[in-house]
Image (cartoon, rainbow, N blue to C red; front, side, top):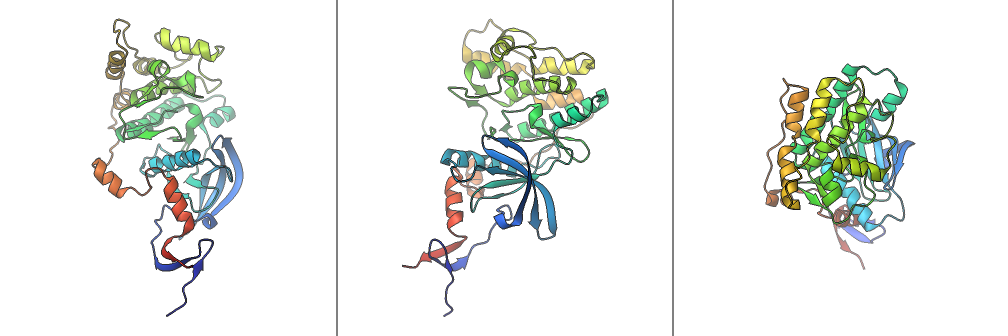
Amino acid sequence: MKEKRVIPPSNATLINGVHRPEYIVLHENVILKEKIGQGAFGEVCIGKLKTKTGELDVAVKRAKEGHTKKSQVVAFIREAKIMRRLDHPNIVRMYGVATQEEPIMIILELAANGSLKGYYKKNENVTVETKLNFAVDACRGMCYLSLEQIIHRDLAARNCLLGSNYEVKISDFGLSVADKRELRLNKLHKVPVRWLAPETIAQGVFTTKTDVWSFGVLLWEIFANCRSDPFPGETNQQAMILIGSKTPPMEPPQGSPPIIKTVMDLCFVKVGRNLSNHLKRIDSVQEQRSDFTNLLHVLSPNEAPPTVAPKTSATDLRAKAKFSDTGFDEIRSSRNTEAKASVKR
């Protein structure tokens, strides 16, 4: 009998190897280069991913090393779990995750032309045609997400990147939720209030229709050349009052084509004040506000909405899930060994 190889540090003995899925990336295959962004989760770096056919330019989102809380790890893996199911030219693609040691990383498509906001900083005279293309691209991506039953929750110019053909790609799914009709939070903490729908501010409700509201704000950013955050000159508190009381809460920037006014008004539908019951009011606004399929039809009348794969049952989804429900247990087990093992005492 051949001697079994001991796998440190668990002293486990390899019995039968287990196939490692392609989306699980080894840290040794990720080459990190310059840092291009940072947030509460950690940082984003430009890098390269070693593949069977060569090296691929990528962006790497990695969690803070050493003192990552379990809740942060769970959120990080939940984001990867959502991104892994997405396949659309106006959504940033995920290539894989590296979870077998710290820092855990999500390996993403590198947007060749940087961020939307960065583009406006470099280009002062952006044509109306280009801005309309940005708007249609973003709408395509959000239409796809809504049909995939994903609520983005953080749609804004800061989370839009540009691909090799200057097409908009929606990114940053750290706050997103999947396969829920709505999400209700008892308390909003550190939220981007200037992009929030009135029902989100009042009741903590997030749906694909609250994403529609945020899309209306994104249109304002696109046609304002991303010069400032929405509601310039107003405090967050003043912006919240305008969102809740003014109809519409904002007008398109000067020089915007009439179609942008039309679409923004469709995004900014608010419930009538004659409905006293909060739940009825929220249901009413969900019915009255346009969905992304309709918005795409207005912006690009001859374009069909994106197609998505048929939804499977909840039982099938659980059976086929590649990540555990929490994500943390899988990270813990994958760090120990990639094999079925017996412990050698």
